[in-house]
Length: 166
Length: 107
Image (cartoon, rainbow over all chains, first blue to last red; front, side, top):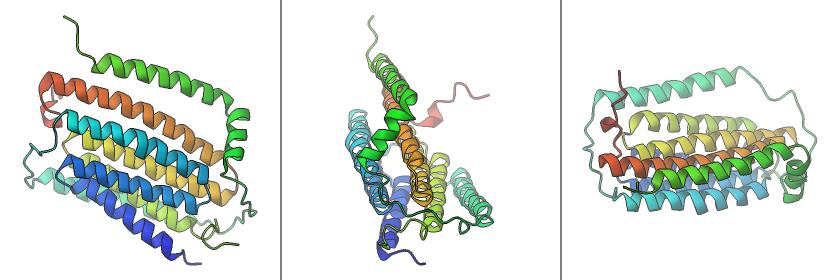
């Protein structure tokens, strides 16, 4: 069965914006196209019936991480690209390596087929109640450890970014 | 069943899309010399893996994959906070975040 037209639209937008992230000259345009890419991935999540995860994805990525990245770009005054974009052999090798990696992954997943297993249709997964039940019963210990990870990340970010006291 | 949310029809296409996004991320890490854009390409790779986990979660019909995506988002947020603090610190010491100027540890 063919995927819907919405899938093609979202996929084309995410791939094109991901290519813009890599190839655009100014870091500001890279950050903005990465935001577009994250919104299209959130659209894919909604199409895959994971509504709670789509909202969390928009809040965390487009709301927190990309604002942090934009502030860093503006704080470090990286808006004009200081490095000259000359074509050298390293970039050619990088493009060839990326393409070859894509071919290798695709060839390895081509041999496996997914059609043997028919999942029972369950439209109830992916809402907040289901994920909350999972998080607070089966994954309670990783949930608590992730808060420790956040505290350590916050302390290390403050320590790394503050000016040294002479 | 709604053809948009029908899980088992489009999983192969999501597999294709995730491989493509991951390869674009790897190519960006190898291609660019700005350390900030390398960090953003790492985010792109993490999101490709997240998309694949969500598509398999919808395919298999349980929530465990979506919970894994939740924890990957947690780790990605912590990683970005520490990584951007490192960028600010490097910029304050060296004056640029071009990775060509960070070759003190090169053999």
